[in-house]
Image (cartoon, rainbow, N blue to C red; front, side, top):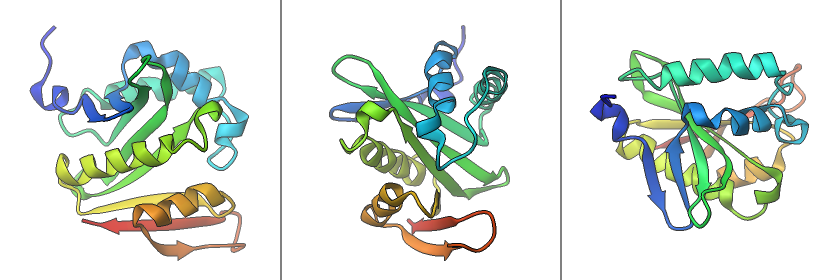
Length: 178
């Protein structure tokens, strides 16, 4: 199988203790486990059904085949034992404007409060700026997700929108400039 060099170069982002690797077809079970977990999804959306998980996973795999994908999803991997600890990703708003990207992270419950999400998010932000030439990185969080909002602040994001108790979506949007 011939691997496109531009995709191959973004397969791994290293950092001591954890590393990020682009999801592969072998990662469906962990993808499904994360997206169907009520606790993990409580601030994001309704947990996925098996059908919905399959559908969206196929879309992720298809996106990874593009030279300039709309989204990239990475497994957060424990470098000691290769255990997948969560997922982190980039999602470009517009395929014609590669300068603005959103970052998101989800970790398995047993890896919470251990800075895994924080470190993975920092790694993917660095990759967004340095590898993918983004100029602006956004992070969107439910207003009630205090840990995620605090982490965004600690990472150096600036809050640009706060829709607390305004309508059905209680969101905070954070922005980081290169």
